[in-house]
Length: 426
Image (tube, rainbow, N blue to C red; front, side, top):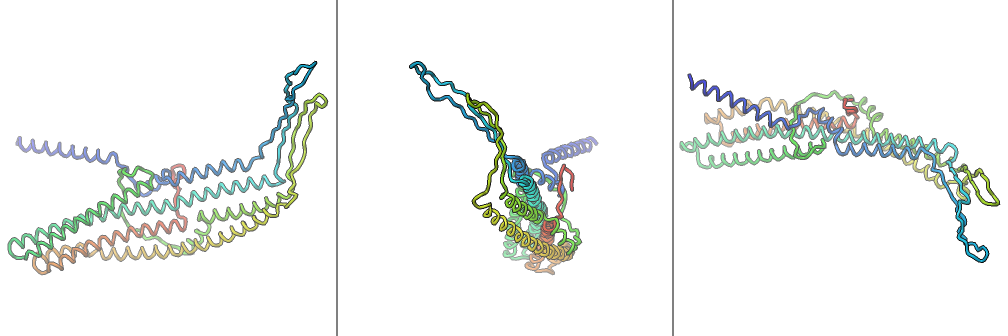
């Protein structure tokens, strides 16, 4: 009775200690669902942080471009020439003889256009930020699927290694009892070594995928994490013309190009207005013995020699160039959406086919083991079944990973991309 209680006590202590160790191991790990990984990348990815700073820099430039020119101040200090009084040199009495302040202005209406162009430039940078996020969104979703696939692949190779070892042990028993030649024993050992090499390769691939995901999330490369989701399949309802229409209206690249075209048009108007005089006003103060007075300065700068025709010609060409770019970009986006739809539909069909193939794998392997033990299946046929089982499982998870990647590309192409402004998903 005492021994039973003692061993029960040791068992309870072992369970408690094991749970504490597991808890301690998981304590330092970050746990990420797909949404949590995307949210982390949205705020911490270096590319996103850099793009945000570019927006802020453009806002600063917009303030400068929307303001009046700085005033110009001039001073005249006289009294540097030495004088001679009663045959003696007298140090000059230096004094501020005059000063003036002038303020230059742009041609009428030009400042308003410059301010509007500056606002357009800010919006262009904001759309570039969205385009950066669309690319990072696709890469994070693909990297997340890459880690999940590598984890599943590692399990497949581990199961295959265990099966190869069991097969080797069974062959070794037959060899020791004289029921199998030595060649089969050697071959079974070779299969185990091949399976061990595949398992090690799978471990390396998992580490590489983890490094890639950490990089995208803006975390140290060696940071540990645990993904809370699994590779799964959910058919996506694809609405061809609706997707195409949405992409042409909401893609950040198209919106940005439309803004560039508008800015080019406003810049053309600004250059045409620049043929008007650019006025300036000022105040002058003169302090001389013979002239002690204030003056108001009025004037204008005239584009007298070329009437700004060269700049106008340049701006006309720039606007035409932006129109061509917009037309070309719209065609590229249409092509991307249609191609992405085709790729996603094909990826979906592959998952369905591989899922059907996977359903018979477990039964195939069980039957192969039984038949081999009963002598109904040859050595090479069993190895072929083992290989088929492994490849079918890997093909299924590979198709899921490919489906994740293609749906991410479609979401980027159509701009079905969530954002996390203020920490909330939008």
